[in-house]
Each structure stands twice: as structure tokens, then as C-alpha cells.
Amino acid sequence: MRIQEPNRAGSGSSPTETVVSVLMVGVGGQGILMVSKVLATLCQAAGLEVKQSEVHGMAKRGGAVFSHVRFGAKVHSPLIPEGEADVLLALEWAEGLRWLHYLRPEKGVFISDVRRIVPPFACRDRGRGVAPRYARSTPAEIIGRLGTGYALDATGIARDLGNERAANTVLLGVLSTALDFPEEAWLEVITRLVPPKTVDVNRAAFLAGRAWVENAVLPEPAPEPAPPAADPLLGRIVNRLEITREWCKGCDICVKFCPERCLALDAEQIVVPTDPEACTGCRLCEWLCPDFAIRLHKELPAEAAPAGADVGADAVGAAR
Ligand code: SF4
Ligand code: SF4
Image 1 (cartoon, protein in one colour):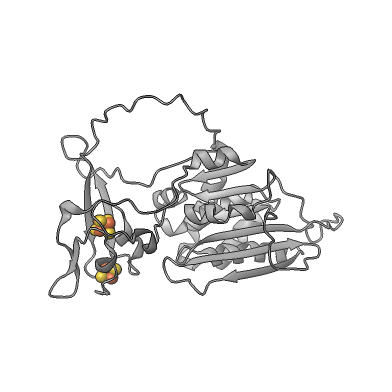
Image 2 (cartoon, protein in one colour; image 1 turned 90 degrees about the vertical axis):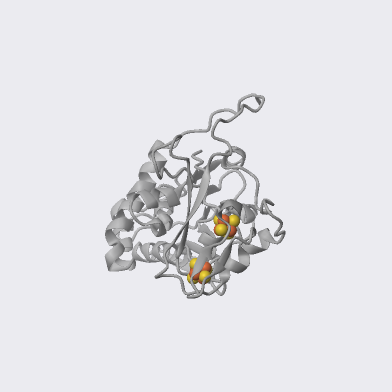
């Protein structure tokens, strides 16, 4: 979907009265402010007036962050009223759902990573094996209700490109297909604004996002509910924690928040798993560690899959 033809500097096209509103949401550490800055810079370079308003006081890892970007020939207010966002770009699935009411009914475009970052307060019930209280709607359910929507595993795409922190740029690539700015202009701004050593991966991530839209498919109509079939692999997936000792600062966050209480600090104040069998693979420790010192791998036992095969990528939803 194209939102409108922006008034590009020097293009000779007549200024438009329409203001385009893009709301970007996510949690601290995901790079919301970077994508918002890219869009604002791009609009300025195109000769448009831009107003930006953001909240990043919670920009520690896990805190909610959002940014309103509005652009056009004349923009009076930096804030997007409810129900008037032309695009809602979500870097985290539940944050996207939380802001859905800001999207323009029927005409708004929803773009979201399906990555789940479960906040600690969703794990307040610390009983063993208790599921976190996190948004339960699936990408297919949400996308099916919207005029135009994209739900993709941007984090997985970025990880395949070598740096999962470029997931925000994958989503920028998707966003670029909804706005009429030339691909080269996006790439030029991205190249200018990202750290020099990440230019290549960010450019690749942006193009991967655009390519994903080209190949996105409508979800199949929901099949008749079938009786649950026995999954031969069910119960055989093993959760394995990989701890990079050199990166662990012993801050104790993962130990305190692990719902299963299966982590502890050792004598050198480095985290170690104390009860690996109890780990449910909720990934809370991985998401909350400020130093990226913990990774969780979901693996099949050797007889069921090649050794070390990781089957634990977040659920991929691809729908339009
Ligand atoms: S994934 Fe981490 S936080 Fe979750 S149960 Fe396992 S060790 Fe605990
Ligand atoms: S693994 Fe991360 S969250 Fe856990 S103690 Fe070490 S630095 Fe803190």
C-alpha cells in the first residue's frame, strides 16, 4: 500500500495538505530511536516538514519506548491522535498489539516483528512451569483483522544476516514499501546514521525487509480444527543455556527473574545454571541480561536431529 506521494524537494510536484503519521513502538534496546531518526532525516531531505515526539525515559532493556513521526507540507502537532496512525511499526509483538487502537481503521498499515520480549511483570507468578501472562493473539489472527498488515520474524532475518540487532532495519525495509521515498534515499540515510562497522549488515537488512514484502503471502484460510495429533517430538526438546562468562557482570538480574529459579551466581560472581532440567525455555534471562551474556538454545536430542540443531527460533508468522 502506498500512503501518499510525498512532496520531494525539487520534484516540482505540488505540496500536499495531507500529513502522514507513523507510530513506532517497542522496548528499550531495540533501536526505535534509530529507525525514527532515519525516517525523520529522510523526510527532511525530501523537503518535508517533520515533527517527532518520543518517549525514551524507559530506554533501559525491556522498558516501553515509542516515537511519533509526522510529516507533510505543514505539520501542526507532533502527536498522533488515537485512530490516526497511517502506519504502526512495532519492534515487539505485544507492544504492537498494545498500540493497535492508534492505527487508522481499515486504511492503516500494521508492521510488526513477531519477536516476543516478555516483561518481568508478566512473570509475577513464579510457580514452576507457569506460562507468562503475555499477549496470546497469534499473528494470523491479528493480521486477518486488519486492512494491511505484515507480521514477520525480523529478528530471525537479521540473525541470519549476522547481527540480530539489525532487526529494526529489516522492519524499516518493510516500512519503506508503504511510503513513497526512493530506495536509494533510504539507503543513503541508513548508511549515514548507523555505526560505521554495521553499515553493510544494516543495508542488507533493509533490502531483506523489502524483499520479504515482495514474497509475503496471504495467510491460508484457517483450517477446520482437527483433533490434536500426537507430536513425536513433543517433550523431547532440550533447553540449553549458553553462558559467556567473560560478558557476565554478575548483576544478578537473571537469577532474580528466572521464574523457575534455576540460575545462581558462582563463587566468582558469574551466573551458572543450577537446575537445567527445570528450565522451561522462557528466554526471560536471555532478554533481560543487559550484557547479552546468556543465550538459550532449544535443541533436539542427537538421535532426533543433527547434533546442536537449534529448533528454538521464535515462532515465525508471515502474513499480509
Ligand atoms: S530460560 Fe532462563 S529465565 Fe527461563 S526458565 Fe530457563 S533459565 Fe530461567
Ligand atoms: S548473565 Fe547477564 S543478567 Fe545474568 S548475572 Fe550475568 S550479566 Fe547479569
